[in-house]
Image (tube, rainbow, N blue to C red):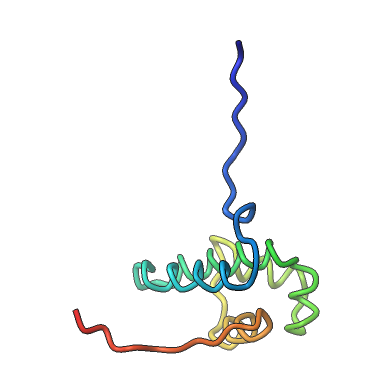
Length: 98
């Protein structure tokens, strides 16, 4: 019997805004400090919600948004904030009392 494997994609498991917000929060906590994990998380959420609609909601071009949220992307902070706001999320900080 031949086994079939498919590529695992987090987008298949991001069901609803609460799951997406928790995922983004985890990306922020685990980010190594260069924004790469936050950018990847935003890209995953954008794909789950629909990149074309997100582009319309942010006023950014679809191709530019895809590039900004790609592994090679380096979006400006204003772009990140536009995406977070368009997704219906809020960015907040809390003290790390570790």
